[in-house]
Length: 186
Image 1 (spheres, rainbow, N blue to C red):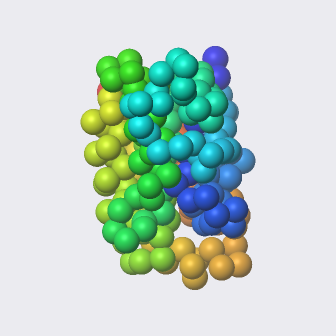
Image 2: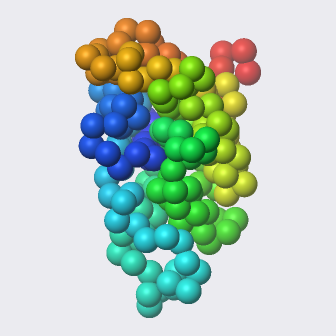
């Protein structure tokens, strides 16, 4: 059985290091794991309960929910913007939290990773993403973390998919995520 992981990237920039990190997850997914990089978060309008109805729900939001409903787990990949996660990722979490208590995130194993220019690799943004997704109902895997610092220098000439250390760490996160957080010791 294949475990389907949906990767949501908080950066809309095509060449972002976080997008590249998600691409590395797609390329280096362990056997039995399929990682899909979601395209189109920038098209999803800000969450508004007035438009979250069968008559008015935007197609981009419906597509996000339908795609997320087919996932077994989620990989949130976030840069750090002004000390927190980008609005596009928070917005995706908001859409996937509804209907409250039965949204696509509810009970789903979720890991948060990322890379940032600073010396801590974006941990503030990652912590905020974990908090938000957890409140939205996701099962946050606290042991599945990866914060890569100094992205501008580290990935200036090397794609994360070609960084041996980053790939090894990413594979470990994906393995934990695919197992739903269960380890051989669990």
